[in-house]
Amino acid sequence: MIPTYLEDGCQNPIENCEVDSTNYATNGAHFVCPVCQFGYFAKGTHCAPCEISGCLDCSQKDICLICEDTTKILSPTASACVSAISGCIDDTDNYGVLGSDWICLHCSGGKVWNNGTNLCDTCKNVFGS
Image 1 (spheres, rainbow, N blue to C red):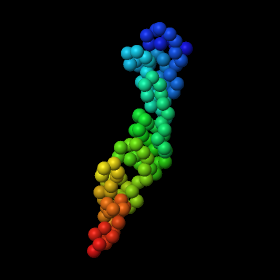
Image 2: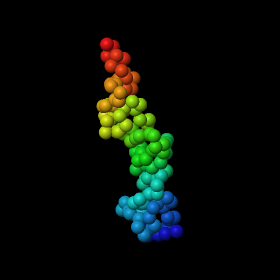
Image 3: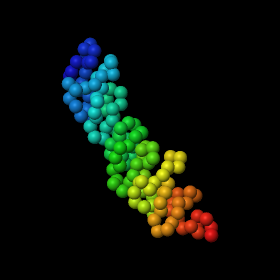
Image 4: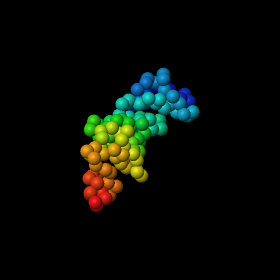
């Protein structure tokens, strides 16, 4: 047990905090963890586990930092791990954002982006000629 920030009682050390209690930060009334352990994020006065499916580490409840599956990429909002776009030149610099979804700016093999299917497709399938 350690003294509370206001020294008006005792508290347990903050679980899953990367630093020891001598390096805690404060919100003016309570100790808070400045750096949570991998897989946890600071939430109020404690470290909460990352609960985004397929995400190894979060910076907050709905922001993923690292996907568990290395073939997945972060969604544009970083709220999920999603599959890379099949047929898109393998570099997220070739991705653009439409709404909250990725689109491919440069498809490989002479294909073009089909907004209807969200896939790289042949010109004939996209434009009908």
